[in-house]
Image (cartoon, rainbow, N blue to C red; front, side):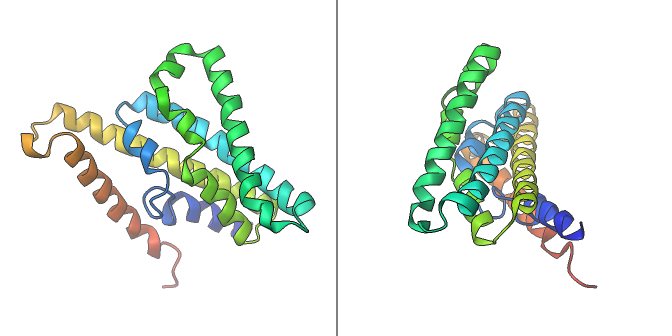
Length: 192
């Protein structure tokens, strides 16, 4: 049980995919303009990460035993299929959210954080429970990064910011500061 807590906290805070590994920066910078949109994309990403972790485990355990060279292409097919399914569901259930997410919903397919999750979990040799815990922690960490960035961006819209750094420059400064802050979690579980 202690190992699962470590895997979860590590993926959520210490080795956050966005703020420590710099994976998934396109949706991080693109969708984080509004808090609600960022949160909903984070939920969709969590779902895709969980399905990807499940499929990666199934593929590695039962199908790709004698063909590990097919691992990468198999992961890409699973991710693309899952995202297409989610896109159809969101379009049917919430057209407003579908419109708000725009191009960034299909970009989950090419989000390197999703592919990184499958590759990292496989390379670390995680079993089913460990892989799902890792996916949940990574997805929540991705959502946390999106929501933090969206909240800070909404606050800076209301603040008096010099014109020179308004917009993209300010967003990159915020992202850098968030990344440095998350690097502080690296010593969270070190021995005292």
